[in-house]
Length: 285
Image 1: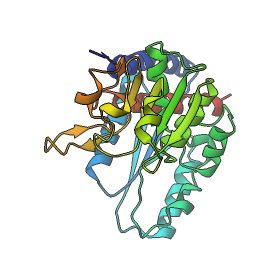
Image 2 (image 1 turned 135 degrees about the vertical axis):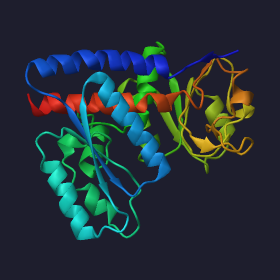
Image 3 (image 1 turned 30 degrees about the horizontal axis):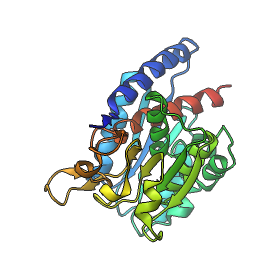
């Protein structure tokens, strides 16, 4: 039976560290604040928003939600985002995506100040991540994966790391973060030839392809570490969620595996707060 890499102990450790940092900042008259921009009221956005607000409250940070109707026009929304970005008391900005198709999301993302881009929404933020600029903030999900690897003392240096997925949200930045710590990284995807063999060769496999239970027994091997980033509707259990890994297939084979739910997803809001506090510290020198 594989060791379960649960997210709660990781999140609790991060929150304990952040609580001390916020207390120290408050002694200097500074309270970090996260600004959350939401258009409409999608259930998944509301769920994540609730978790983020709760984590902010736990560590002593402030948060503010800026909510707009789905039919907001481009000019009005651009003005709103610009005004939020200029607020001195807002240190980090999270904007839920995708935006309604009536809005030019690329243009709107560009209005978020890079120094407040705590979830890598801007081209400038991505450039910092891909050029190893420590003042940039990688997306929260791949950062949460790294936090889990560190917490469970999983070595990365020199290891074969396979990232299954090539999105800008997880796959590509995940590869960059593993490279920073001297992992030997392969990025693959649904069109990779001999995909199961490529994945099976990994010491560390990060599954972030967005397909329910795609990673089956023939993708994994004994001694492997599997981090499952996926969050999908479970085709076999209506109303429940599953990862990109078929847990029942992989768990008896691999050495360690993160579950879904209760894995990576439970760490992301703690990372969001960590990035906001880091941004606050840099903004206040």
